[in-house]
Length: 291
Ligand SMILES: [Zn+2]
Image (cartoon, rainbow, N blue to C red; front, side, top):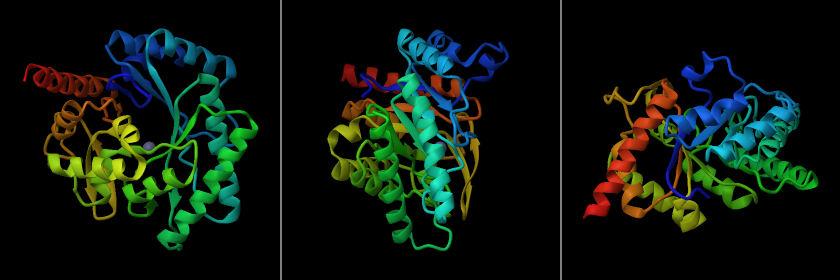
């Protein structure tokens, strides 16, 4: 678990990409910006790792050297509650991401569990539990026990991934931890996250189901988001405060409860807004220490 609240981007910042440096140089770039987390994007991966083992290992070594908390966003092409063939292929894709995460010594492979399709939420959930358990079996066979599977709260109503569903998955399958995408919860529930109490309630739910340690050390995604009746539509930058969910209440709770989450910025200006989130949280922590 993280030793303090940590902040970083989902993928290489645009200022890094123009340098055309190899991805394993990202940690140093982030360290220079005062950031300390990075979520590598393996979101288009197929059944095999689409990165050289050597590069993955270099990324891991550099992350440690520059004190950057490393995670992987797994393939979007995963549906653990689809038809039989889809589930089989999804497990392969997820495992490819897990293998690369193991090379990097990354903490979590984040993924969106799947789509309900014609199935009931209950049936979909059961299929996800089964498929995830099988991926964990494969991980054990490969002696991968440090990487966690991170099912994420999802932003569209067609996707499995309400907070309750994610917590149930984490309760049911070992080597798993929840990934709390606050924008997704906000979008799929029609703009639910508004006040300090809304965030407190969500944290309470997590604590009740998975325990205090899990609640205090959440892996989170955050951005401001625009949504429709179907859920998430578009991400917005931190300055566009007409969108939610508001960051202040979350920052206040981090300070008040002494939480140490890892917060990955999914704002259109990834690292720039990660620094903004960091500064807001640091300010709240400072205010609290003066009280
Ligand atoms: Zn995601």
